[in-house]
Image (cartoon, rainbow, N blue to C red; front, side, top):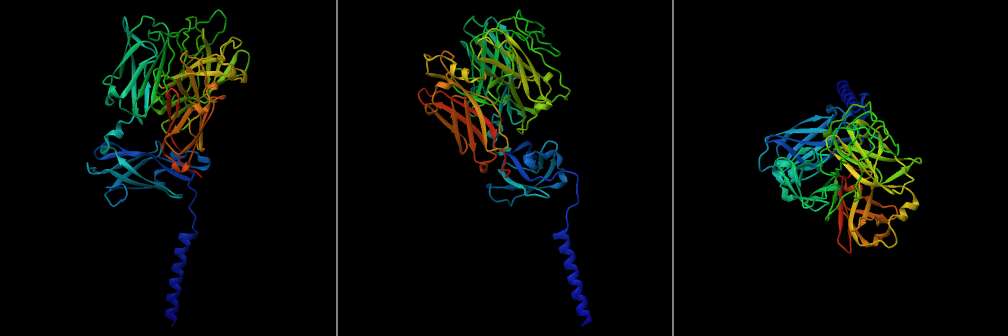
Length: 522
């Protein structure tokens, strides 16, 4: 009997030890933050070889802060299995390796042509994970040619003949250059003046043939992907290449100290890789007034932050379509720079890497940038009648944005144009503003012009326009403020959002790809 009691005590003791280990034991402090949610980014496994594919992931901490790079690979478990129909996951298992610094997971497996899908389960040690079925890249060739961005690599048009000029462009699929793989027939190319535009994908070169000799003016060149609507716009003044940097001042004595290369007189860069529009002259900016050569050089204060490579930059945008007047001769605007994961890297891109211009109806104004706050300051005599200023902001490698920014005041909003303006819509365009954050809405600004190029946004009733998006959402317009607000359902996360506005009367339309929804972080 004593032996039986002793055996029972041993069993109870073992049970208590097991229970204590599994239930009451707490993990030791490991020195890095614990993620609260997990997201597998994208919808496909991008193949770099027949045996290797990659996808991206994100880990979020308190308040939705991205902490992907802070969580070591040893704290993550990846289970990746081939799926024949996208539902079951009983196929072969791929080996996984993680790179937290880039948020990349590399899978190694002997993929065959019959392998269409792979189910991914990504689980951190101390929180719930994420699972997703990805399309295997080599089984869906079209997905590898999806245009995610178009970039101009030239900041001017290079004259190559009496009536011809060229520019360089690049087409991006997530982070890969697919310029040579996209036929010219799939890209709509046109210019704001009478001309024809031909593309050579093999060299990434565009050739403009002008049918007019009047080329000493603002020229807007537009490239648009016919399938996705992704658009890029290049604005130049005349055809000549960008000359060497100059240091000049105008007779009005508005000077600008130049501690770095100033932006030149002959060209303003424009590149809106995510702006999507249609029509014969659809751009984020619109002006027909050329600038004079008596330009003010743009100042650009050196920034001590280490330079960020252009490959990390996905989008440059204006936070608002308005300028904020801060003095009789100064006004400010806000800008934002995002990487491929839609994270704000504005502070990491020094002003020395950015070319910025501000064009009034008659001259250039001095501009300075402060990356630490994402604020640009324009110095100009704002007592002159210039309700709008064309501001162009471009990284030295070509990615950028250009838009007509309005001098913010309640009077100017109501006085742009006259009561006799032609209200027939000729152009609708989005002015890129704040991108998606971890909220359930995004706000954009839009602009409507008539055939004379007059801004008639505030005079066009919202009921005259058809609003739509590629996801379940509510969209509203405020013509007076030129704002478009989209509220979406977080349960539809990780879907690309394309917002469009169409005029019921003329059919003129614009669309903008504002990226993917964030994960539900509630």
